[in-house]
Image 1: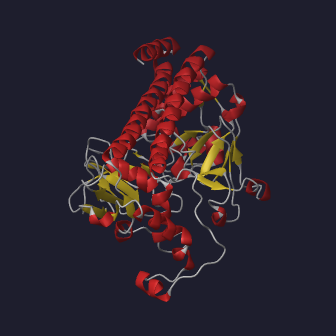
Image 2: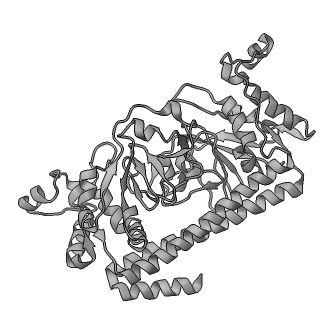
Image 3: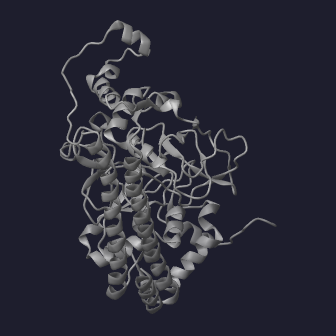
Length: 469
């Protein structure tokens, strides 16, 4: 038995332990049994969702709404938007009336809490803006609770304990999956009002930092467009247009989308600056990663969900060996998502100190000719995204942006002072997001202290955190 683990439980316990009848050994791991005993020993701290007054719900199988992506202005939250912080600004938009047309497409309100339902099942998000939710998310209508209670719950949902509870409750198929029934049965931490107020104050400060970071990012893009005289510019969108046969044959594309006047107008405006160039002419590295061979140790793997707009997330990433990888991510690289509706073309500078590995959906760009942070802002701006939209290949659900396509993007090599101003705004946002992350981590830790050592110890810890920040 060396190197193995065994748990012995009674048949009556195994059969009656959960409503959906679990007999698989994963459900009875020793850590899970220890968690269960700890919760029983501290039952005064815990309650059920129904006792707290929280309903658990999810969108069901509504008809495909992919054709409406980008048409309206109502946020549509998906798995990629949820990871503690919900990316509300960059989430897909749909017409709000779809929620009325399809009753199984559910809405969430500010103060509700989301869980990812499949694959990475332990990711949690706090809703700040109303939106619709995809069927890959479960949500709790915590918006009906007082703010201190729902923020305390949000901090609890991010603890290692609750993440283990989620993992244990998930169905053990090829890919873990949460169900509404099982989530309803999970124990919810109920703290006192003083503890909830203290935790809520910390989380609200974290979101203030996030709002400031968002403003800094918007300022970086606005500065770029102002320098080009394109703030408020509306590109041409005629109902019909033509293209010369010679241009069609030269491009290798016969789809009308490729020849929209918008795209040629963008490139013409960039060329008129006298300082435009194709990205491929200044890149020393322009390569996708490969499918990682995951291992218990090695470098963190960065995939599409980690490459957000202007930032790369490193948080419990899986690791892999670098042997055989075509490219290693280094500080100062720019990462671009190469697949996925709503995520394709998203770019971010890699500002972390440690190297990492890209998977086969992430392209690594490296250049010394322009500032990498400026380059990522340009690619995320309308000027970059319009060009990316033109170069996307494939059909719905299987779209791709290859390194060769990225090389053809025309960029503006801005004066150095402009590049440095853009860089400063993004670095400011990076620092503000780091402060927010530290505060959210402290709120989570306070709940863990309260459960383990009592609320007085947790409040003392929070007072210390407030004094340091």
